Image 1 (cartoon, rainbow, N blue to C red):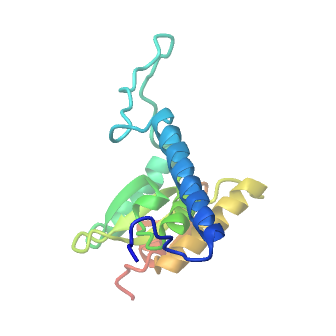
Image 2: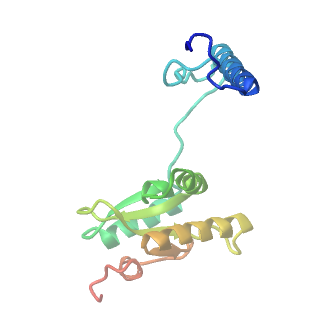
Length: 188
């Protein structure tokens, strides 16, 4: 008995038909996927962005970073902590904390804190990290958005272990008072 022309599945020609139908489905699915991939444009690398060009009808001018009151407080704070810290004004909250989390969570946290600005940051010259933050209480009573902003900043600073001091800009402070409030007085 020869093997040529022998049915590999003797007595079951229906199984052979199922195998051919299965192969035809796989082949058609593969061809459909290939056609879809060829029609769908894929970037040839990282998306290129055009350089930023300022529209012609826009005029930019320098603006003051600090008000007169802010500048006075800045100078007093600088004098109070000059032997201990560097003082920076108008610093973004996200620039003083490292957010370590899974990618999606990290992005959410960074988006939440991205536009929060700190009035003054005391930076240790050795570690180059923020050791203390000073916020100015803007108005009395504070507006609801100011309360929310302050609470969000407080929670981030607390989680990072960075102390916060809130000052009233229209209150007169002496250098020794500020040194004590900021924890750098000789009495400590």
